[in-house]
Length: 187
Image 1 (tube, rainbow, N blue to C red):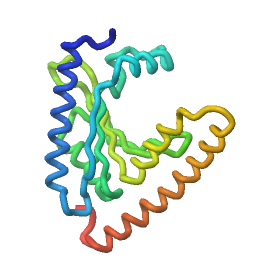
Image 2 (spheres, one colour; image 1 turned 90 degrees about the vertical axis):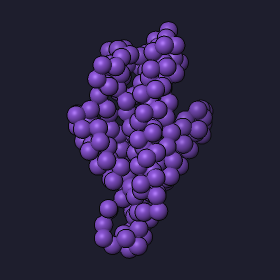
Image 3 (cartoon, rainbow, N blue to C red; image 1 turned 30 degrees about the vertical axis):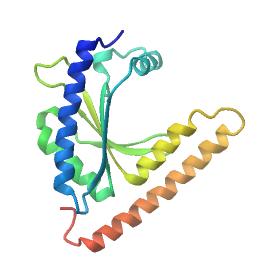
C-alpha cells in the first residue's frame, strides 16, 4: 500500500482546499469571458500509482507531481489564461514555474501547474490542469477509446489526432466570439 488511510485523508483535505479556492474563482468569473464550467479532483488510486511506478521505475511516490489532481474546465482560452494567472498569484511560491501547455502524441492539450507541497504537510505535490471545454471533450473521448485494441486501434488514434487539430480551430473561433463580446480583453 502506497497511501495508508490517514495519509489519504490528509491528501483529500489538501485537494479539498484547492477545489474550494477554484470554486471561489468559478463564482467570481461567472457570467464573464473567463467562466469556469467544471471543477473536478482526485487523489491517485493505489492501482494508478502502481502503474505509474511500473512505467517510470525511477519515480518515488512522493515525487509524483500528480498524486493530488485538480482540474478546472473553462469555456474558452480566455478563461484558461485567467485561471492560470490566478493560480500563480494565489499560490505564489508553491508554483515553481509558470503553468505550461502540454500536448501528447495524440494531440491532447491542457495547461498544467504543479504546486509544491503544503509547508508542514506530508510532502506531496498537487497538479492543477486547466483546459477548455473542447479540450476536455477530446480528453474524455481519448480516455474511453484508449482501451480499444486490435485492428481499429490505429485508425481510431489517427482520427483522434485529426480531431485534436479540428478542435484547436474551434477553440480559436469560440475565443474570437468572446473577444467580440468582451472587447476590453481577458479581464
